[in-house]
Length: 115
Length: 109
Image 1 (tube, rainbow over the protein chains, first blue to last red):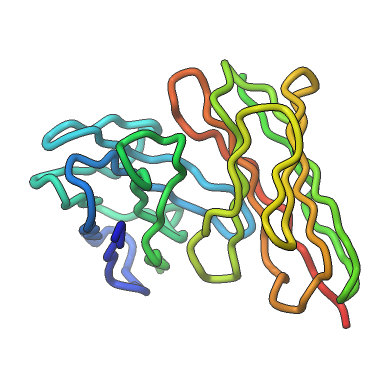
Image 2 (image 1 turned 180 degrees about the vertical axis):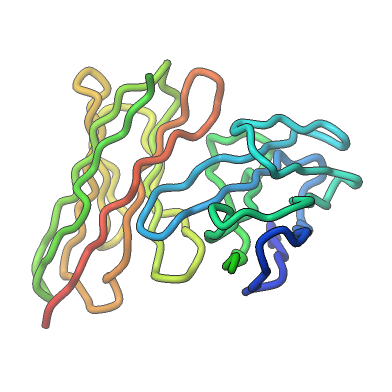
């Protein structure tokens, strides 16, 4: 199983509040993990990816950060949310073998609304 | 820069056939994916093409022409449940997925 657990499903947070979204994965060890954001009616924007514990690559400079404290755990955080952080956040992993060629498996997503 | 283009929205009739096109300009090419995404849900994998030609999988087929930077997803015998967004994504030379904005497909009875 390459299941991804992502929570919460929906979240409403005030501007300036902190954020912590957690993603845990099952299946093969040492997966590549990804955090994406999708604004309404838009494509997927890669925020962070990780190829191993403690290894984080950032694609978009902003007030978000990510951490990978364990092989199967990927966390997205913010110290102070902005209105522009609203969107649909998706955690993803490579499907098998660590190679992206096999496709990505996505978690069910978190819909974040910053008010 | 890297760019993937696909139509924003298409409408088709239940039982008919629809073709969703995708053109791409990327730094290298290691394959092209099609994903289906129902409203409010995560994308699900449909197909992967790395060689030129047509790959058929049930009612869905995907075609690739690397020389033209072009792919299409063909959906036959359309059903109401096929109403969704269809995302085209290309794996670039760094094995990172570059995503199109998606095509919203509306199926009418």
